[in-house]
Amino acid sequence: MNEPKVTDLDYITFLMAAHGVVSCTEGARVQPDEPGRAAHDALNRLRYRLEPDTRPLWLEAETLVDRTHGLLIIDDTTLDKPYAHTIARVHRHWSGKHRRVVSGINLATRVWSDDTHGVPCDYRLFDAPNDGRTKNDHFRAMLQTAMERGCTPRFVCFDSWYRGLANLTYVRNLGWHWQTQLKANRLVNPDGTGHRQLADCDIRNAGSRVHVKGYGCILVFRIDTPNGGTEYWATSDLLMSMNLRATTAREAWAIEIYHRDIKQFCGVERGMVRGERAQRNHIGWALRCYVRLIWHELKTGASRFTTKMDIIRPAIQQFLTDPSAVLAGFPQAGMAHKRATA
Image (tube, rainbow, N blue to C red; front, side):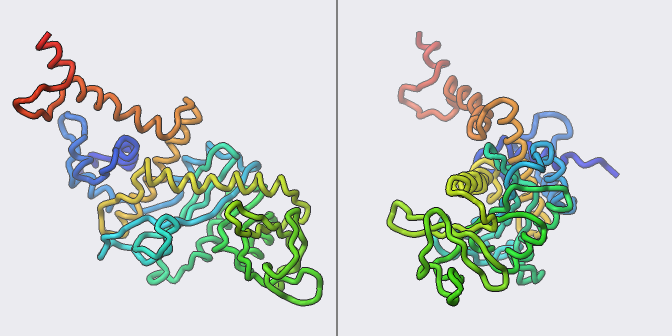
């Protein structure tokens, strides 16, 4: 049996260098010009041959994670698939980018943040119509995995989608504190007189203790936003200060930066393949590509944007020196033309 011409590491390296198009056809075109170079079929077989697995992501990310210091952040994002009709795991999801429900793949990630970078450590793909697992099931599964790997976060931070009583209780049972946002219509008991919506309670900016039925006391902060709105931030840490709440919320923003970067720099949305296994492999390898970009930034100080641009700048410089696309009968740019006419 012949050895495969490409490996998952080859594919990840291609994702790091690729700009825009990350198809197998493009991957074959940019292979080094040497005997036995990989063709389109070799790259496509790779995506179907390997069994999708989240463990390699953790094995590569754990060297960047201090498990005793930092935030554990869980959130999901929609990978746009606007023209998908037969792509596996594509469903209708709310998109924060489009502010409406769109077709796409829902990716939930557990990110570890130490106030400098967000490092993806675990992920799940939503496919409830087929496997019956909800977003909340994936949320708790990733928390359980984090506990088994020895993580002891300062706080578990998550989007208001995961604010359900079962999730709050699950985090508490693991021995961890949490912080999240609550909706204004969340029922709480602020003074023992009965349950009412947060919007109808006298919640202080510095934090007010309220009782949640089935859970117990939590601390809620009222935040007046610049646009005239009101946000309610809640935590299980009854001694949390205003400054700590703000600091924790700022650090938790790392997952939003991560969501932007995996789409902009790692091609996570651009897997041009229909099959479930191939799509899952592409997404997993895109996240491992992001880990490498973070590692390179920590080592050299070069941002993810700079790293990507450093790869393509030499090609642009070469083209500007001697453009291959010219317009006949008109003056041409490029250093080669200037030297020839000097």
